[in-house]
Image (cartoon, rainbow, N blue to C red; front, side):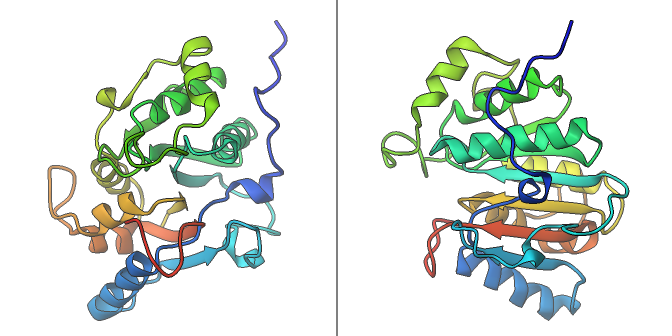
Length: 239
């Protein structure tokens, strides 16, 4: 039958590759300093404010003719407010349009059910094959962040469940980062970091594992062509 309308309105495509919440100065500055020390990588790191004041450079491919789908990893603080849910919905819609090849979505709040909401949205769009990961610490759990569980979280889990219910079913986010990046062509992946930057911090601090002999910084330098970051708390970081 006819395809159902999305659960929530999707944003214009140029806003959706989107990305994402202002950088913790500590994480981004540390990445830039370490990368420079190791040899001037070609990775672009761009930041923007949640208010939308970021320049057009914060949006990969904005204004350019559509070509091959963007290989995208979304790192979101989903759970805190509905804007993060809308961005996940939007990226799924972009995947349907052939604009994005969504390689993975990871959550950063520490809320166990947050990745279950992502799974529900992906399932709605028929994208259960997208890999999922989650930060499993206490950063944004109910005990330390009273606003990290939006009212939509429990409702979606109860009424529109996907294959994944909570983070016990997925790997740690930084481990998934390494797995996905190691499998991609060089300089091909865009990372959209949307909120807390703890996953990127753990990724950059990671060491060789079963997926790659490279360190986190080396792996990002080799595989990532752009990191777009939006939001957070400046100049302090929750990472």
